[in-house]
Image (cartoon, rainbow, N blue to C red; front, side):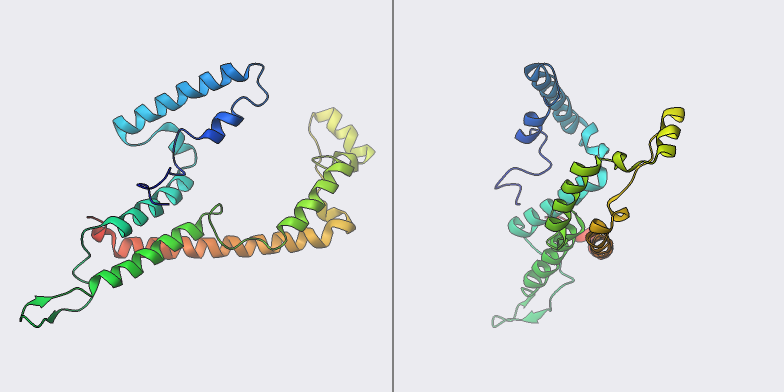
Length: 216
């Protein structure tokens, strides 16, 4: 999303955050006032030092959102393009010009934006095709056996849990009914992680290659 046309995903003042900050609290109003104060402090930090404490909590996601937004704004609103792109030629007036660099730079910026967004799990266009099926199976598993599969614990495991205060967890792939969908889902998830990693690496390579051209 172009930062000049809409709200950034990195916006501190998110309506959704205010809606969920009161969950589980005795006073939702007090929780919202507390969150309002945090937002004021984070906004002040961004003004003073350029980043807020909340930006550090998940820095790589913050950058995955921030960089493509800035690139998109540069692509849509810049004044010029790098002179090392395109080809120089002499126009009808005998003047040496290079106006082919703009289309080439657009193409590079578009690809960089695409790669950064694809590296982000939230904005990646490729999704796990087993998401819906796995989600339904997981809900059924939790309904039958508990969130951590606690109802599958053996007597020996229960005794160990009581003795040491720990818990033995059981997972979907231990149940034949859920084993196939669980294996399919996590196999696809690994492939998606590889794809996003590849996109991140290629985005970094392009960033290194054109780093000093990122100005307007």
